[in-house]
Structure formats: structure tokens, C-alpha cells
Length: 71
Image (cartoon, rainbow, N blue to C red):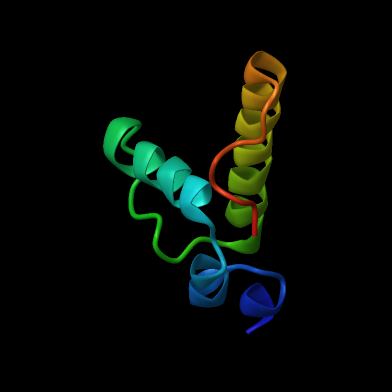
């Protein structure tokens, strides 16, 4: 219950945007990090940092916001 309150678990998964889901896909299928469908609040926060870094890099390179809005 605490995990869901802090943004983890299935509640956190439902709140992910498309880029966060893409990060999960790479972690699971490319890096072999295991299932990403019920992550802890810490894992969710790490994924958000990764996606924020991707957005920042994209904007720095192209001058435009990443095409998938952040949730």
C-alpha cells in the first residue's frame, strides 16, 4: 500500500507516459532487467529521471520539446 502511495506498483504504471513505457520496454527486453509491470516507487523515480534526461537531450539537440508529452 505504501509503495502505491509513493507512486509505485500498478498505480504508477498507469500514470506512465509513452516515453516511460519505452524506457521500461528497453530495460525488460534489451537489458534483460525482468518484468517492468509492477515496479517499486524507487524504480518508477529512476525511470522518470532517465526519461527526463532523454527529453533534455532531445531538446538540446533539436531545439524542440520531445514529441511525447510528460505526465
